[in-house]
Structures are given as C-alpha cells and as structure tokens.
Length: 228
Image 1 (spheres, rainbow, N blue to C red):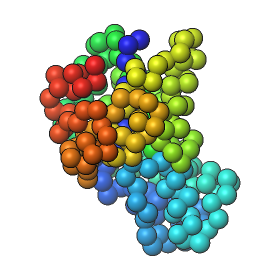
Image 2 (tube, rainbow, N blue to C red):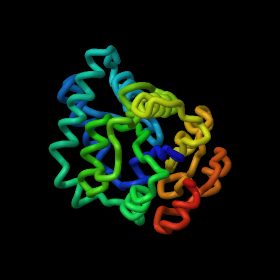
Image 3 (tube, rainbow, N blue to C red):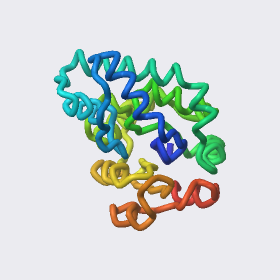
C-alpha cells in the first residue's frame, strides 16, 4: 500500500449545509428537552467537540451518558432525513469521479477522517451514492476525540492492524476543506491536501500549511497528482 487517503466529508465530498443545526435541534430537544438557541462553530471540528459545546451552551452537563444519548439522537435524526438530504444536498463536483479513480489504482486505500459519527458518515455518503469505494472499518470518526489528529492516528492504527505492518506518516494523505483538516494532518506528520470547496479559500489553506491545494475535485487528474 503506497498511499492511505483519508477523506473529510462535509464540504469536501458533499454539501449538506442547513441540515446540521436541524439535527442538533432535534437531538437537544429529545435528550434535554431544551430548545436550540445557538450553534458553536462546526467547521472542521469533531462531533465530540461540537456536542460538548452545544450541551454547555445550553446549560447541560456534557457527561458520558448525555453525550452518548446525543450521539444516538443525532444518528436517528440523520437517518430520518436521508431522503430529504439526497434531494436538497449534493455531492460536490468531481467527488464521485475522484473516489472511483482512486479505487481503480491499487496504490491507494481510501477511508475517512471526519468529525462525523461513523453511522452519520455512512448515511451521508450513501445518500449520494459515494459510499462504495470507502473502507469504513478503518476510518477515524468524531466520537473518539475532540482533536482531528487523534482521528488520523485511530485510522492509521486500524490500517496497520489489518495489514500487519507499520505505516509511515508521509504515506498518509488527509484531504479536507478547512485549516483544522490541514492542522490535524501536519500534527500527525501526514500530507495535507486542501480543497477550497468550503468557507476557506485556497490562500487560507496554503497559509495553514497544506502541501497541495485544489480549487475543487472536478479535475480528476489534478486530484490524483495531488494525492500521489
């Protein structure tokens, strides 16, 4: 295995803007009986960090049972809106082609490092038929830590266990749309590829330290070159 590619999801592979606050509004009401008044910053952050902030903002203690209940409620809320998500959200230009092209190259293994919960990640990608080439079993997901570099370490450790050999950090490529994605990659020692399809510009991603920056995933040849 030459390259382990770790994809972010939101505003890297798909656009599900407008749904996140709805899902949290439903989960917070179900778990605490409180109305959502304000969302914290979510870009590039993990579900554990976001859920902790949401509970604290609304005067609830973010203890393990409450966080677990929030995670379950969020997963249910996403599952119940999958049909709507598939119609109102979208796969980003080139995402399907990029995933398919990497799957055809034996030197790439592709999975996820995402702030999403594992079940939510699957629901989101399946909604746009993007789940076929992703190895979900070795991904790093947002329930595990508040810090993205920990999720990268989780994914690499699972991949090492499967293949029975160590993976050098410079053979790991993290693809994401925020400086948080870039920072996590650099903290781990991985290659950081920024995609300016979110709120961060190409310059923002370069300034964060990305090794390569793409305007979108639309140019499959450029994507393959950046990940190689």
